[in-house]
Image (tube, rainbow, N blue to C red):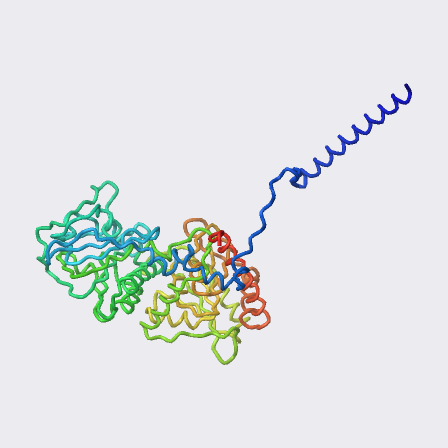
Length: 507
């Protein structure tokens, strides 16, 4: 009896300790977030598939280049935009004098590009959506595009195939309460014109004609579609602004690039007239296209051969030589640091100015003036050719977040771009441009902002030089630059591998 009681006692004691040990072990595994489920009943794991570049015995970069033309980046910010154009004739001519309308939507990029033949625009009584009566007025509410009106399009004798009412929505907009746009190709005055345009016309309706970023976006769309998709020659094309906007410096860029053989035509000169066209491209709206992708999120695209080719075409059109900076500065070439100043113009106050810019620039000259020339420039006083030359020759370009930074399109390889952000602003168009063009991009969010809506920036000296000294170290010292390039190469490989893994998981 004593033996039985002792054995039972031992068994109960052992069981209690076993339960306690299991409970403690599971608790610890929970804390460590370890999967403690038994692997005995789990399905057999599949062998890990070798990555594409390993099986092909090539580098990650080589694998990325092999598959690049099938990637989302190629379709969103590169020549793939043109491959995605779904050409569709929406109105076929029924006679030799009949109009023809060809729609050129690009998948997920724009819906309003189109080519028209044998048609006219009736601009009698044309008026802008919203005009600025005084230059000092806020430009955000300005819209110089001509309002939609029944009979604005003068087309005739073509058979419609499907709906066409939305093709020109962005070109001839309407107010919210206006009637829906409806038009048919049966204009009774077709062929009766006050002015006839014989050459191929590139028609652009500007909404933000004062904003270089949007106008460069429109220029890129026009160049890509007219030259690379339609195969038009810039020698035989004419640029026409079909809006009530004023002449701007960026207009000269479009003129040189796409229509230098003929004078620019502005909408103000066409109001009150019926204008006939043999063939014309309605350019996709400035708010669409490759420059408008990933403005508010992480940028997955590190190259755009289309944007690079666009930049090269601009230099060729202006007959300007591209500058080639050395990897690090040497005394055989000038070192120029350019600050793109935001200043009031035409009596209009602007926001996001660098309040103590002059003081910081003076301190930069004291510290680095023996190595580099440091200049603050108001680009509003410069011609387009002067702006291109200044930016191309600059080693470092600094500017407050704003449209003036669009000029970094002309920056040379191994240039550094420092974009000074208002603390609350999240908008990354210039980061994207730097990635497309292979420029070095540094965002700066320090300093103190004034209250909305002005957001003028004041930056403490020590805070500014903590960033600027690092940039200058990479500009002036080979060892620092080599470390920077090595780190950038690794980051790019990680990025390319991520694209391969996420977009091509089955290869």
